[in-house]
Length: 79
Image 1 (cartoon, helix red, strand yellow):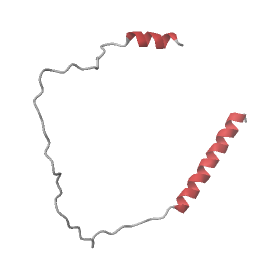
Image 2: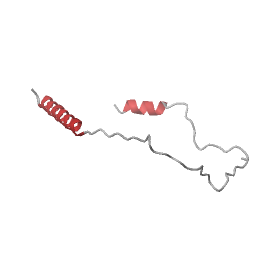
Image 3: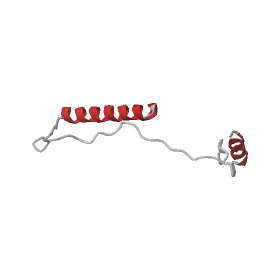
Image 4: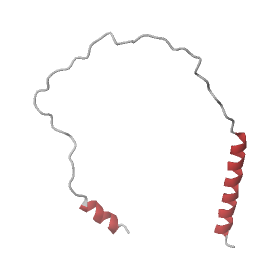
């Protein structure tokens, strides 16, 4: 057996041991909200939202590219 196989076996055993111990420590918690009564009123903000007319079309700062040929060529040249 080579060293790589031994380390992978050790890692697998450690993973199994940690998952087994985690399952033993988990506890189940149940919450029952059936008897709780919730009352309240609708709360709204005190101010109004003001909207206005937009004059003219704003130009976008984002330019959508149609191709990525130069980046593709550069990524192939790296290898």
